Image 1: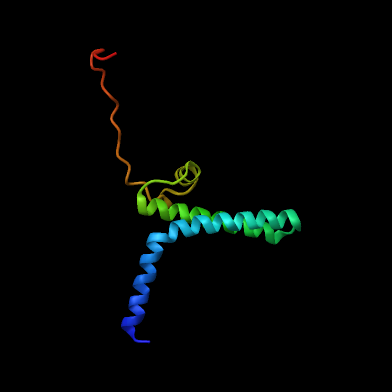
Image 2: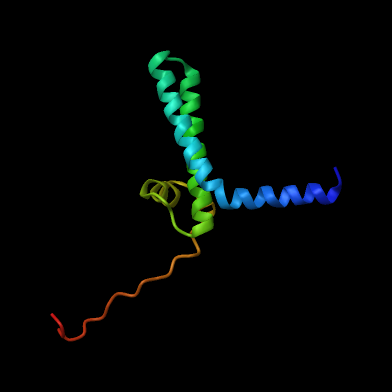
Length: 111
């Protein structure tokens, strides 16, 4: 395989990841969580808990990818966890917020 073909495949893979990575990670993480819950219900063991934890991490990585790409969070839970619990350097939307000025009282017109 020549270097140009390898570079082409790398570019196609990165573009596909950029376009579909957030969706794939969120869905894959959700499926891993459900598989872990089903495994825990059928045969309680520690590997089911590891599967649930891995699924949750993949699901949050998908939300992080979505926030990086769209500058907003897809779910309120992801926004809460990234803005409240994670360090500020992890939040991909930290410098994209626009301050909202409070509306000034217009002397009661239109009330």
